[in-house]
Every structure is written in C-alpha cells, then in structure tokens.
Length: 189
Image (cartoon, rainbow, N blue to C red; front, side, top):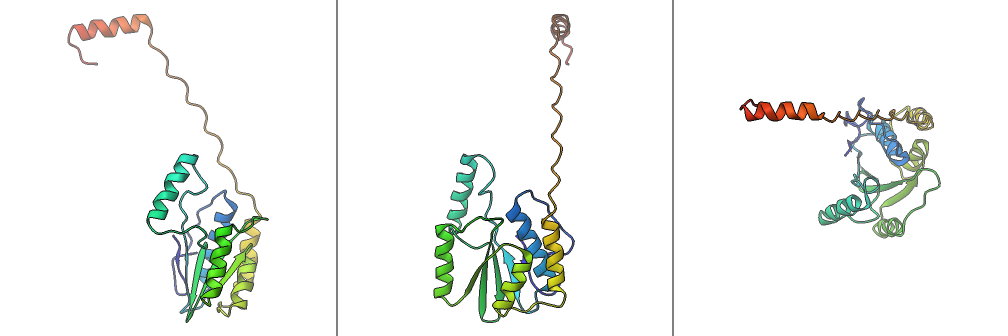
C-alpha cells in the first residue's frame, strides 16, 4: 500500500514496481506524482484490492472473502487524497473501462457526504482533477505528469518464458538393481 503525501512520503522515492496490468501501472505513476508534488499538509494513500484480478476463480473468490471479512466494500476507490476538511476519492481506469455499479454507488455516497470523487485515466488528468477540487500541488507537477504519461505509453517488457526443465532421467534396471544390492548390505544412499 502506498502512503504519504508532501514531505518525503515514501511514494515515488525511487521504488518502481512494474506491472503488466494497465491500472496498476497508472496507480504507481499517480502515486509517484503525488509523493513528489502533493503540497503539505495534504496526504494520500492507495487502496490495495488484493488479487481480485489474478489467480484462479477459486483464489479470487477466497481473496475477496478475506477482504470482505476485513471490512473492504465493493466499489471502494483506488486512491484517497485528504486535504484540510476535504476528502477526494479517485477511481483509476485504463482505456475505455467503465465504472461498476458498486463504484457508481460509491461516487453517489461521496457526493451525498460532501466529498469529492473522480475517475482518472491519466496522470495529467489527475493534475486537472486536483486543480478542480482545490488540492494544491507543488511546482513542476504538470511537467512530471506528462513524463509519467509518456512512460505509461511504453509497453512493459514481458519476462521471457522459462525454458522447460529437462525431465529427470529414469533410472535403468541395472541402476535399480545396484541400489537394491547396496541397501540390502546396509549402505545408506
């Protein structure tokens, strides 16, 4: 989970975890921008949704059950930005992905509570959203956002497929007979 804001938050301090998932890459780039440019005393965090999109259907169901037991609700935003007297939830979407019904319900709940909610599709759009909501950024944020968006446009290099391990050679009858003779003599192999 990325945390922080303002002053040396940890996010964007040089740790880059590359994912092939477009929304995970967008989240990492948004966190880097916020870690470097979100003006104090503002603060942000990313919300980890677990392995909702990875693993077998059984693994995903077990992960979601675990998260629900801890109070995680469907539709929760991907990032939360706190400013004095105000909370802004961000839902990060890659490409043409749309909000789920649960995400739309979250958006309506935040509006009813007087807090912000926005769907963000690029790091530059994040800068625009923060400006619209009156959340201050330090100088250079827009240029940094353009650089981050440029990096998002670069495809992630995939790891080469692992070479299949050569099958272990099966012992021959002669080798098995030798092992049996040695064991009969009490030799530990």
